[in-house]
Length: 200
Image (cartoon, rainbow, N blue to C red):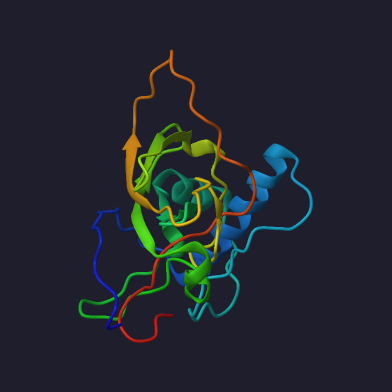
């Protein structure tokens, strides 16, 4: 769109999987995470946005484990401190010169702010967020909940009125003697306007 601009670029590995396989993987992975933590209540949103999935795929255990090994996690953070983790399988491949796809709930930009960072992260990483008010917060990635790429997300950094996140940095080797501030639990989602025109 006219007001959009590119803010970052990251490289993720391509995995040859059909939309139906990716949808089946996301559904099974979400169920596995819920089982691991004994989660109850609202389930994760796992639908692939604006994709023709066709018939539901049945993943063998071998295929599921193969996709699991190659899965990457993508962190998105907005200027009002909202963020989430999403699976790389939630981001479909598009051709050069395309309009792009949504990485957040673009209908809630006034509430969550525009996207300030999107990059691959690991479960054992930490992130450091810096605001234009001179405030810094360091949080473990494992405390940031999974959510679909097109969702709003939850607060990672509780910014003050008029304060915005201006920088997000990945810390891959956390220091053992430094305690990270825990991110609040809950649903996660974040980003700024995606692509030209009307994003998917």
